[in-house]
Each structure stands twice: as structure tokens, then as C-alpha cells.
Amino acid sequence: EVQLVQSGAEVKKPGESLKISCKGSGYSFTTYWIGWVRQVPGKGLEWMGIIYPSDSDTRYSPTFQGQVTMSADKSISTAYLQWSSLKASDSAMYYCARFDWDPVRAFDIWGQGTMVSVSS
Amino acid sequence: SYDLTQPPSVSVSPGQTARITCSGDALPKQYGYWYQQKPGQAPVLVIYKDTERPSGIPERFSGSSSGTTVTLTISGVQAEDEADYYCQSADNTGAYRVFGGGTKLTVL
Image (tube, rainbow over the protein chains, first blue to last red):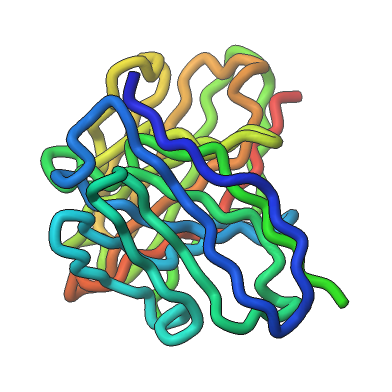
């Protein structure tokens, strides 16, 4: 079964750092891009960016460029999203998703989401 | 930045046809995609490349494109189709991808 399994919910304080993970299984992890999507509770989906685990080529949405860092460890089929200094406005659900470049050219498999709560 | 515009809400009775639109300046050049999200769940892709349906998605879901608008049509709406629907596409360069604001489909 093709699936993405994300790390568990996090509760952090402003200024702290955080790295959440997304582990792929059931497919060749290095031949598909992995994307990240933010969803603030009660709000819509926001495209954050995508990373190609084979060579770590990364494309950030302008909104998130410089705010987060995407990375991947292909040896363990895992992608990461990290913050160096969290803000309260980073509180949201974060989804990873597999981007099928051809033929679908969209997110065809999604993780279950990781809830990040940032509060003093 | 590039924006995709969707109506906030659409309501239909069971068995009727629901149409959800998504407008964007780059849509004549870029494909549109549609995701369904039910409460507490991750999104699911229901239409890709304007009109294509992934395997496992019911035939009542279809997509179309005309000019700067793409449309998701759900024929014979069922209670289980009640969800938020998001369109997604790219800007004219294809470099930046965005989601629309989402449409809440209510089945009366």
C-alpha cells in the first residue's frame, strides 16, 4: 500500500525550533516529489512548496520562502519540514503529499497531517 | 501573487447537480485540479488536468474548462459528497502553484 505517515502532534513555544517528518512507503520514494501544505484551523489549503528527494531540489512558494526549510533523507524515505524560530502564526495542520509529476501533475497521496500548536 | 477565486458555498438537494467554479487568469494556459476534503480528513484528489478522474473516484464527479474558469460538476449529489472542495492550479509561468479559497458544498 502506498502511504505517507507523518509524525505526531507538536506543542511548542514561540521562538522554539521544530522539525516534523513524513515517511513514504509502498513506492519508489526518490522518483516522486513531496510537497507540504498548510491549513490553519477553519481556513483553506496553502501550497508551501515541494522537494525532490533524489537530489533535494526544492521549490518554495514565495509566501513560505525563508520561513521554513524542506529537506529529505532518501536513505530512510523521509521528508522533513522545519522551523528555526516558531511564531504563534505557525499554528496549523501541516500535510505532506506525494506529487505525481506525470501524468497526474498533482498531489495524489496525502499524509494524515501533523498538528502544530505554538503558544506561550 | 496569483489567486484562484471560488464561491464560498454551494448548496444542492440530494440527486441534483452541483457545479463549483474556479476562476483564474492563467487557467487558459494551466490545468485545473480539484480536491475534496471532509471534516477531520486529509484532502483527496478528485479531478486532475481539468477533466481526468483518478481511479476510485465515482463517475458522478467530472471537470471542465472554459477560458479563465474551471468547473467541478457533481451529478446526482449524495449526502456523502458534503465536503469542502478546493481547486488548484499554477501561475502563467508554471513555477508557483496555489489553491483556491475553497467551497463548502452543503447537501440539503
